[in-house]
Amino acid sequence: MVDGWHGWFGTIPGAVLCTVLLLPVAVLAVGALARRRTAAGCPPPRAWRLSLAEVGLVYGTAPWVWMILLPGDQAGAAPARVSLVPLRDLLTVLAGEPVTVLVQVVGNLLVFAALGFFAPLRFPALASVPRVLALAAGCSILVEVAQYALRLDRVSSVDDVLLNTAGAVLAALASRRWWRTPAGARPTAVS
Figure 1 (cartoon, rainbow, N blue to C red):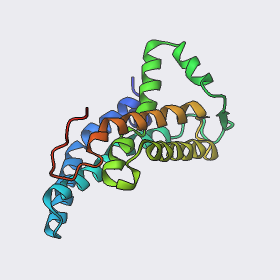
Figure 2: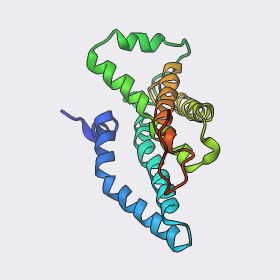
Figure 3: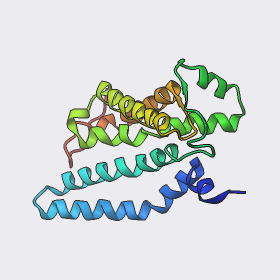
């Protein structure tokens, strides 16, 4: 049984539910932004590309960041916990139940995946794997420090930073073919 609002909105299924429920709003936002840009003189393909990248970046990242910054049951009372030994938490998770492995690993990979996918499309200066890696690592470190400083009853772990960053890099590689493709042009096949 789901326990209160935290049970719905403070979990991966809750983040997915919010994401699904907000999809029509995101689609409308892309359309509204693109029409506004087109009316201001931006070529339609560029207007749609920029609008999709901006909304996709926020729409795909905000629910995950929301979820990981929600306080746990002992927030404020439990001591802040830190795990700075790389792969220790990950190996512990991998030795656990398959569902826990799936939720922990896939969830952490998805946290900044939208950032990795859309940031290079929206901001040409970020159109390189090392820059996406640096941005995602910085954002992930910021979230982990916030979890620690706010005493949210969560473990601030270097493994979360590694998985969050890996997810962003993998998503960036998935969008790489469109990084330098001008809006409206067809991407060429990679040999």
